[in-house]
Length: 308
Length: 308
Image (cartoon, rainbow over all chains, first blue to last red; front, side, top):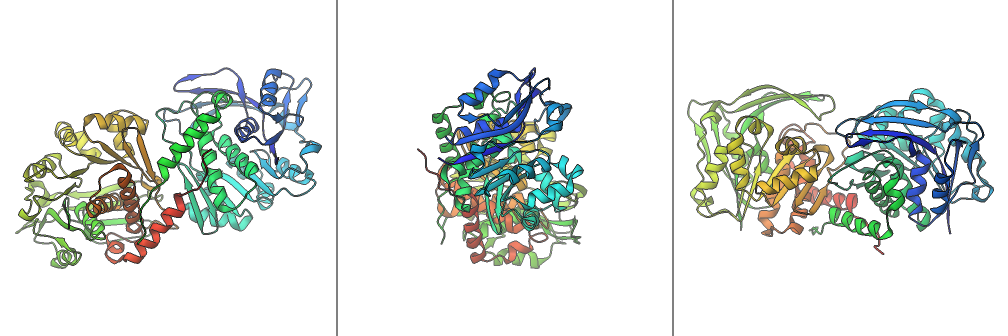
C-alpha cells in the first residue's frame, strides 16, 4: 500500500459562525488533511507538534483513523497552537480574533523513518522553511509533492516561499492568493506564471465557487457541491487537499486525467467538512455517504451533448 | 423548423472597460439573445422598439443572421433606448453612467402574426407588464416560456414581477438577485422558494463563476470557460440566455437532461461574447469555433471516476 506523508498543524480552534460558536476544539491543517485522506485507506502519517495540553483522546481518534502519529511531537510544558476566528454572515470571509503560535514557534519537523520513502508528500500550510526541511529529510524524492500555502508567507517569507514552490509538483492556492503571487487578475494567466516557478500542476481554490486544475493548456474545473446550508467553512481547503492527496496516493496514478478524479474527490470531502463544526462531520462520514455524494457530483457536472 | 420569439431591448450602448471605450454601439438584451440563438439555425423574431436614429445597417445585420425584424417597431421622430456604463478594474462590477429610456418608455409590444404560435418564448429583461402582455398575445401557450429579469423590477414593480414569474417555465436570474428575491442566502434554498412561485426550472447565473440549473432536487452546474482575458462582459447574460433558448428551440426537447446541454451551449456562447466589445464577436463567430469550444467545455468538466 502506498504511503502518504502529511506535514501540517495539529491545533486548537475556537470558531464563531452565524449558527453558533465553539470552545477550543480540534483543528489544524494536518488534522483535516489526515482525516480526509484517511477515507481512501492509505497509510498516512502526520508530522506536527502539540503541547502537553493536547488531549490524548484526539491523538487516539487520529490513530483510530489509521493515521500514524509517531511524527507528532508532544512538547512537555508546551501549549498547543491556537487559532480563533469569527465568520461574517455570508461565511465567505472571516476575522481572525486570536493566533497563539505556542509550540509551533520552535517546530522542528522530524519525519518518521518508516515514511521517509512515502510516495506522496502533502505539505500543509506552514512556514516555507519547515516545508523545505521536510522535503530534504526524505530519503528519496517522493513521486508527488503537493504544497499548500497562503498570503501570510508571501508577505513575510517571499524568498523561502519561492524556493519551496520551485521544489514541488502541485501547488494548491486560493484565487486571491494566486493573484497576489503573480500580479495577474486572470486565473489562466496566474496559473501560467506559477507553472514558470516550478509546479506542473496548479490548483486554484475558489471556495464555494469550486476549484480549477491547470496543467499547461489543460484545464479542469470541479464545482463545490451546492448545499442548503454551509455551517462552518473551517478546514474546507485542507479537507479538499487531503481528499486530493488521498485519492492520488491510493490510485498511484498521477496523470492529469486522474488528477481530475482527485479534484472531484477533494471537493466531495470538503462538502462534508462544512456541514458541522470543525472535524465532527469528517470523523463520522461513511463510505456509503461518500459514494452517494460522488454520484451527485456526476449528476451535477456530466452532460451528453453531441459534437457535430 | 421550430420558432423562437424573443422580446427584449434593441438599443445603443456606450461602454468603458479597463481596455478601452466605445461610442454608441449596438446593444440591448434582444439583440444579444437574437444573435446568440441565431447560431442554432432556428427561426427567430425579435419584438422590440427603436427610434428613427437607429441605423438601418444594424437591422440588416440582424436580418442577415436570419432574425425576423417585423416585430421591431421604428418610432418616427423617436430616439432609441441608450445605456452607458463603466466597468471597474476586475470587470465584476460596473457603474451605470446614463440611462435614457426614450422610445422604450411607451413601448407597446406587438407579436408578429407568424410568431404567435412560437414553440419557445424568451422574455428578455423588461418591465414585467410588457412581458405579461406578450404572453397574452400568443395564440397558444408556448411549449416553453423563459424569463429574464433583474433587481430593478423587484424594487419598483414587485406585484407585476411576481405575476409574470408565476406564468413561466424557466427563470434566469443572477445570484444576488435570487437572494434579494427570496431573502435566502443559500442558492439551493433560494431556488426552492422560486420553484414555489411557479418556474419548474431556475437558472442562477454567477457570472465568471458559472451557472446553476435547478429542477426540484436535481441540480446541474455549468462553469464559465476560464479565459486569459475578459474584454467586455456587456451582454454576457443575455447571450447565455440566447444560447440556452436557441439550443432548446432547435432540439425541441425540454427535459432536464437536455437543459443541461442547453446550459452548456449558453455558457459556450457567452464565452465568445466577452472577448470583444459589444456584439462584435457574436457577429463573427464561426460554427467551427463554437464546436471547438464545446470540446473545451467537455474537457473542462468531464471525469471518469469509478463509483464502487
